Image 1 (tube, rainbow, N blue to C red):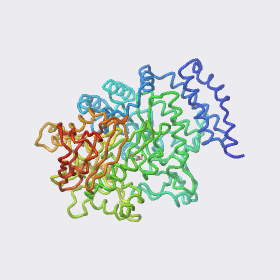
Image 2 (image 1 turned 180 degrees about the horizontal axis):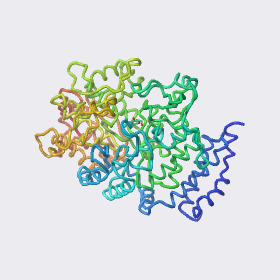
Image 3 (image 1 turned 60 degrees about the vertical axis):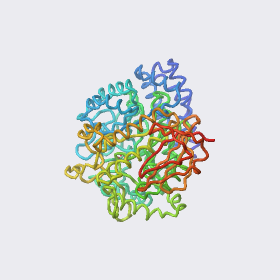
Image 4 (image 1 turned 30 degrees about the vertical axis):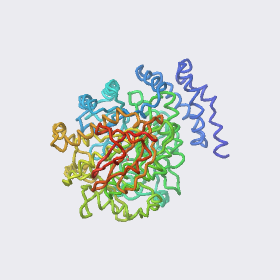
Length: 640
Ligand code: GLC
């Protein structure tokens, strides 16, 4: 029997008849019933496609719907209100007032209580979105910065408790800030109870855990898979598998203690849906969907971005739309740009990191040539309606040169050689480089390497380059003007530098990304109002950018129209705003080390009278626009 033919065995009526006893009251709850009617057909279809060929599919689907019904019944009143509000208003994440911040709880604030005490500062900065890096229980020592989760229902006791997280979420919401946490659903730590049960082959409450992960008795299957998969953390282990003490092999894409879950087993979907619904009811408003590209494996493929990865995301969404509709997904797919966009839609991830813009901002600063960045903004920026990019200058991770080789080739650039050059530039192996980055996962076998470093260190502040601060501001000005949600790595707004002390800590010494995860730079924060200090210059510049962005509706939404100048060092584009208002904002940024003048002729498609939003004064475009080295102008212009 074919997969599809079998899938009809997952019978919607059977599920409907089973929810009532599983979740008493659900059928009497009009809101849930309406949402169930809207979204169950989708979930049912997706289950058919993913699991239709399995005998246990119906049982898992029934259980998932039961979980959703229970979760809705337990959903706190304030979150139900939020659900209703979000359903009634246009997508809040497209508003020009959006501003994200990200930090580690321990490094930035000590613990959750410390984060709470920072709320006044977050408000001062203008945050509307706060991503707290992984804060769940995880193994002692190296836990990949918390990305190895041992329990999704327990906060790391050193940081606080789940009850504190829920109350922090409420306080943040009252301050206009949405809480974002990671949903690390591709893998768990090897200490998670599911992992222990899988190794032991235990059946608990009727659920057989032996099939929760991908475990093989010998190298036959691992060798077969590794013919087509790539190495993600080669410094830790070659390939995608690690050996268990009993000699068997288990799939571990990242660190050896991060075991990939087996989503081909519907019981895994069901278990993870339960954890997701639990987090939804703690008041988390956005889940950062970690490592989405890796969640489905199939022999003979790269095991990245397979069609089933999308079906899984859609299925998780369908579950949420029934039980916690205001919770949204952010995609973390740091892959080829063609693939990144496939995750962004109302049905999968409503928002997504924009790794291409991030990487090409650095590429442009290094080469003093904006061609690749302009090309990407022109051709790869558009997203489906109602979705948004999260534009960031850098994250807690490394920077990888994820541009498409085909795009580069059109500009006469050889992708391989260019990546090597950029790596050399950013780790200061090129004479005259302003960057002070550190290599990450330098793989001599494949020539692959990525870059770690804070914004200020990569931009030239650490090297004492006179344009360092200007480059920090330029990079942020781009993230703040291309639409969607701009995201600041907290501490970068006061120019924090690389922290080399990780080399002294055994659990971190082997992972150079810790260089760009400094502890909260208190001295820099204290100096943020001092106009002579680097911290003060960065902070004042960024504050101005934030203030102007919030007051400029044209910078909301995500639509971007190209604009061309004859200068290779000039990034140029227009922002018509969310609902294509007139006037527009024309963004001009010079990534070069020498001044440039954009001539009146180039600007002649606009009325002469324009406004320089950052300087707060009127300008006459017939005079042309001067762009000093590493500078940005946001001009409110009216097309003729
Ligand atoms: C994501 C995280 C990264 C982590 C990996 C494995 O890429 O950003 O820090 O190492 O997932 O969870």
